[in-house]
Image (tube, rainbow, N blue to C red):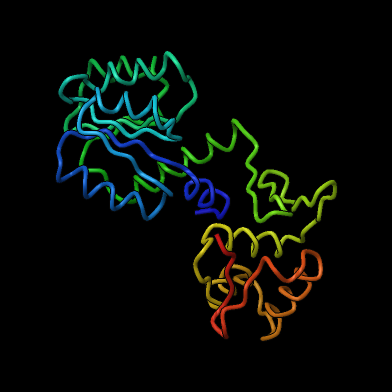
Length: 229
């Protein structure tokens, strides 16, 4: 998965509407590997209330649910928001809903059980849709904002231009913000098509710190680097 898509997902909230408790709880655990936050609902009525209160970025909904079924729930969402990515899951193929779904602008209608490879593919599609409808900015600290669309760091009125490798390195740290990114992980991504000398990563970090200062990127012993949350 591209780092910019990983970043978007890690800063997104998914609303999961699923009436089967065991399935809902296990699905939440899997989703949290890829997204920043998951809120879950046991029925369509609760899902609609959470949608209105929390304004999630992505919706994953079952069809057959008590109190308010998935079709009605999604229609009510679409009355307010035509662009939020919605994935529908169902234990069986509902021919009537397949026809109705065309009007609801779904990312996909997928029959359970959903494989993890399908989930990753659908989440990537959702991230792309989120990226398309708005520029993505991230506050790095009190002085810097990172512009994910134009690949620049903004400092007050100035834009700091980064090289391609600096962009890849910086976005990788942002995608794993608050966690250690090991030297091996970074080198595997940055130098996959070339043989780099042992000092290549160290020199890259040195030059990047000359542009942005020493406070943002933290060195974690001899293990790797991180950016604090």
